[in-house]
Structures are given as C-alpha cells and as structure tokens.
Length: 312
Image (cartoon, rainbow, N blue to C red; front, side, top):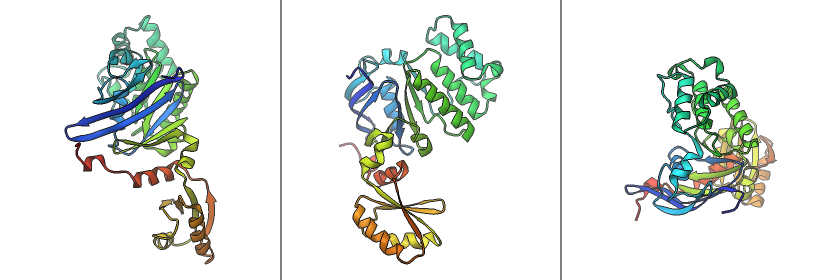
C-alpha cells in the first residue's frame, strides 16, 4: 500500500443469497482526501462502505484500510474509523450530551468530559446540550451524528448519505465542516446521489448495480468519459428532443430546467447534427464542458442491473 493511501483494496465482492451486490470493487483513497461515492439507491454503496470499515466481511478480495487488513483486522479498523449511517442511529431518549458521553465511553476516550465539551462547542451543539435527541430536527440530528463520529478523533470518516432529508442550509453547513476536517488531515469517504455535493469532492467513484463504472479526480471525470455536450435553449424543447432521438452523434439527451443538454462521444458527428438543427434558427446552441451529471447518466445507460442476474 502506498504510504499516502488510507484505503487500498482490490476485488472486494459481496453476495447476499444468489444476488451479487458488490462485484470486484477496487479503490485507492489518498490521505486527507474527500472521496465521493456516487450512485443511485441500491447500487451497493452502503455494502461497500461497510466492508471498507470492518463492519462486513467481504466474500472475496483483499486490501488494507488505515494499514490494517480489511479481512483479518476488522477490529483494529473500527477503532480508528468514524462511521455515520444513513439513518439516525443514536438514542432519541437521551440528550445530546448524554449521547456523546455514551459514545465516548464506548471508545474509551480519555478525559471524557472535556472531550464531550469540546465536541459540543465544535459542532455548535453547546446551547442544546440538554435537549433530547428525539426532539431535534433533521439538521441538528445530523450535527449530533457527526459529533458522535468524531468523538474519538478518527483518522477516517465514512459518511453514508449524510445529508439525505435535511434542508439546503443544513447541507451547506455540513459540507463546510467536512472541508474543515479534510484540511485538518482527516480522510473522508462520503456516499451521495446529489450531484451538487459531488462537485465538492476531490475524487469520485461512480457505482451502479454493484460495479465501479469509473473513478478519478472529480474535475476530470467527464473528460475521462469522453463526452462532448451542447446546450440548446429556445421554444418547444420537447419537440426538439423528439427530433434529436437517433440522430448521428447523439448518445443522450437530458433536460435541465429550460435548457436541453445533448451529449455524445463522437464530437464531430454530434457537431454536424447540431449545426444542421442550428441552421433552422429556432434554438440557440452553445458548446459547454460536460458535467458530472451528464457523465453519470451516460455511464448508467450502459450498466447492467445486478439484481437482474443471479450469481453463477
């Protein structure tokens, strides 16, 4: 494993019954990076994260997390990882302070009272320390869950759909905190299906139906896919979309508000189609860099549903 890599695994595989849920997954996560796991619900993101942090034993594959073997040293990994689940998993009939104190005890944190006090201040929870967790809004529950993940000063954070169901401001505040932690040297692995969150990650891996489709620096993903995208603006975009179907160079068409994004991997053929339609003067066309969402849609179109086939 590279000294700079916090996670380095190859071929991680997991089946449940006859269904292949994670199919030979590889990943290398650099220290201090924010690494985004993107994919639709049911794509295998949660199962993969649980294998990486020692909560679930893989059926096949090998590798290390924080220098420990993911198959033989799961207990050591769990001690140094903060894992935030999709669903709020703390005690709703305990106060914020009581929840943090309990988690600190579980991890054997030294100077526990001082550490809890610091956690309350760092996450802006001090004024609500006595409030029952069950009475908190989604955003405040999210802050409490993150504080609990950090109480033992982990080297690695694994965040599973951490902003699902919270308002935009709470999401923004949460990501501000994630960036602060990353700058402090904490490595963050976060699963999401929000594209506006994906752009805040340093690296991205796309997962669909248990398979990794692509991974790399977030800014380079669309280029790696090889997409060219044209944007069309004007009246009756539904008719334009119907006309574009099956045209040379058109691999996908996606509606974004009042514009149509037309993408393909054959840039020359796509431009020929665009210029022909542009000549009618009905729509304004402009070439633009392909984004993460266009790349994801394109990759998803070629992915095979793992639940449509059984394990041999």
